Structure formats: structure tokens, C-alpha cells
Amino acid sequence: MNAWFAEVAATFTKCFIKDDRWQLLLSGIGVTIKVSLLAVIIGIIIGFLIALCNLSKKKPLKIIGGVYTDVIRGTPSVTQLMIIYFVIFATVNLDKWIIAAIAFGVNSGAYVSEIIRAGILSIDKGQTEAGRSLGLSASQTMVRIIAPQAIKNIFPALCNEFIVLIKETAIVGYVGLMDIQKAGDFIKSATYEAFMPLIGTAIIYYVLIKILTLLLSIVEKKLRKSDVR
Image 1: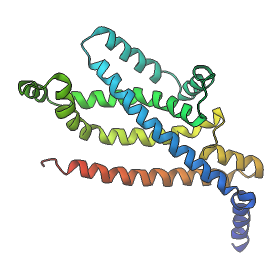
Image 2 (image 1 turned 45 degrees about the vertical axis):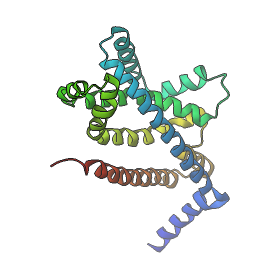
Image 3 (image 1 turned 180 degrees about the vertical axis):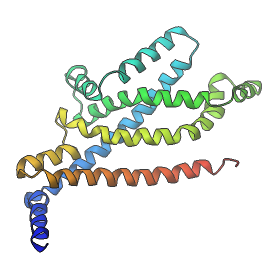
Image 4 (image 1 turned 90 degrees about the vertical axis):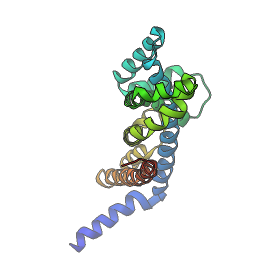
């Protein structure tokens, strides 16, 4: 047993302590968080706009929303990332992590749009009629009456989308970004050890998502305080 612990300790030192390789993982955490946060903001903005398009009575807007949702949901996120990075933004002088965040935001927007659309449709039509009868415009009714109620309904689904997004960013290594997964792969290649780097990256992802889940649950509880049960 002592020999086993000694071997594990030696492998841990080789993978993470030697040559300060732990700093690669620390840097990777920063990249993952930056990409995920910007991507979720972009995704919510795009998702809201596309949801409005899908709910619109104007045929051109419905076509735009339908085509966008269909294409994005029907193609792999890694393919979208590479097209946006190597084709669309090939000649644009932007940081890699920003381009990656845009790619993930565009991908997330298609799923968020369906979440928002379902949330808006879940609100009784009488709420819209009440708002209009009070003299509010369609946009004012949406912002002041419908949206606040819809947010409570869709918040858990949005949280789940954010968690999925963090795990999806593990493919940013395809465009040369040193995120958590890429840092683990680099350590694996440098040390010829597979178990420790892979377990290390898995634990880091788990801890990040666990912390995020706890924070989002606190926010959700605060949103639900005003509910009448």
C-alpha cells in the first residue's frame, strides 16, 4: 500500500509540480471561464432576438429564426467553431478566446432561443392583453410584464445550458487555445502519463460546475421568493 501511495505521489509530482505544469491548468481555467462567460452573454442576446423572430407574425422574421435554429442545431459545434475561426474571422485581428466565445455564443443562441420561446409561450395570453389594456405598447408589455415572469420559468433551463456550455468549451484546443482540456493533453504528451492529467482535468471541471451550480441555485431561490405558493 505504501508503495502504491509513493507511486501516485511521484506521478502527481511529475505531472503537476515538475516544471510548474500546474500553471498550465491554472491558465486553462482562466481561458475556460472567459470563453464561457462571454459565450453565455452572446448566446442570451442572440437567443432572445431569435426567439422574437420565431414568435413574430412576420414571415421573413420567422424564416430567419427557423433557418438559424435549424442550421445551428443540425451541425456539430466543433465544425461551427472551425468555420467561424478559420473562415469567417480568418482575417480579423481578434484574440482567439473572443472568436471562440463568439462561436460558442452563436451555437448556444439556437438552444437558448427555444428555451426563451417556450418561456414566453408559457405566460398566459391574458397577461399580454392586460398590459395592452393599460396602454402599454407591445415592447413595453414584453419587457415589463412578460419577460420578468418568463425569466423565472426558464432560469433553470438557462442554468443547464450554461453548464453544458462550459463542458463544450473543451474543444477550443482545435483553434490553439490552451484551456483546461488542452492543458491536460499537453501535460499528458510531455509526461507520457494519461491517468493523472485526465483525472486532474475531470476534477477541475467537476469543481467548477459544482460551484456554478450552487451559485445559480442561490440566484434561483432569490428569484422565487416573490412567488406566491
